[in-house]
Image (cartoon, rainbow, N blue to C red; front, top):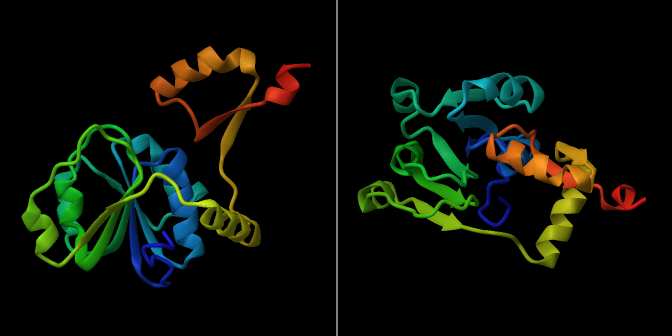
Length: 183
């Protein structure tokens, strides 16, 4: 988010997907002073997005009216969804010079060149930063008390954790407690 100049208080951020990366994008966005809108396919995540994570708005991405109502309203989008989904509807939500950053891992990326070139938008991707970027992120998290929401489980629970992950029954990441699992 820093690399793409998203640390601009008052600007607007859309976060696609509210999982392990998505919830962190919301927390970072709020710490940067952005107005954050969460996009999800699951209405069950609305309360969590607004009342626990502090997002300003929640949109059910399958609701065409809600999506159209946000046309050209976002400065930035961070797409954390790893499942295959359409990029086109989100591209039209970006303002002129808007930036769309994909950090999820769908099997393909497909959208009309018109949605990118009309409005001089930027589409970028990133899997991770280098050591310096990670250190800066950790220092920012410590200074702003940003902590990931995880569920700590023993190694013996790994198979059940994978089953729950497939069912999307995790908030937001599983962390295996190796030290206590080996005692």
